[in-house]
Amino acid sequence: MDINKDQPTDKPKKLNALNIVSGKVEHRGFGAGSIDLSQLSSVIVDGDEAYLDMGAIHAKSKVEKGIKFSTNKEDVPNGHPYWIVWVAADRNEAGMYYAGVTSCEMLVDSEARRGWKILADHVNRLDYALKRRFMLDNLGDREKAALKKLLMEHNPDMWNNSGDVLKEALA
Image (tube, helix red, strand yellow):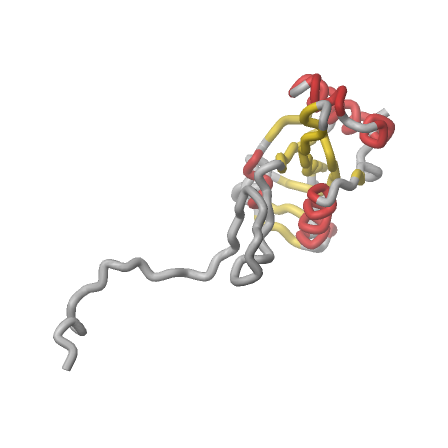
């Protein structure tokens, strides 16, 4: 007979969840596939304006809130084009630099509260930025100029320490 079986337990129930950690994961057990997002930022590019919006990492940017997204572009005939740009930072002997930068498109019709994006593309490009790749071929000249301006003004030292691949991609 267990006299404590009807007593409330003070231990919180553990839930399985995605672990986002900063630092190296050394173990091989649960959570070994965790993603380190501590050096990742998200930028929204709207025509000739670019701004940081960290909510985009979890699809909760100012532009995305309250929007029902579809994978069919025809569902958003009056959509306004936006780009989410994933920016990964790293450090070398010269200091911090932009190590990976990728962009992905979405359309948003804020009046109709409808949007278009391919979530798999957004996730893959986020992963590519974390893997130190540069994929900015889908940006137009206006968007590239806005992103370049933001990156240069946000931290001139990081821009100066960044490689030629990024600078050529935004030229």
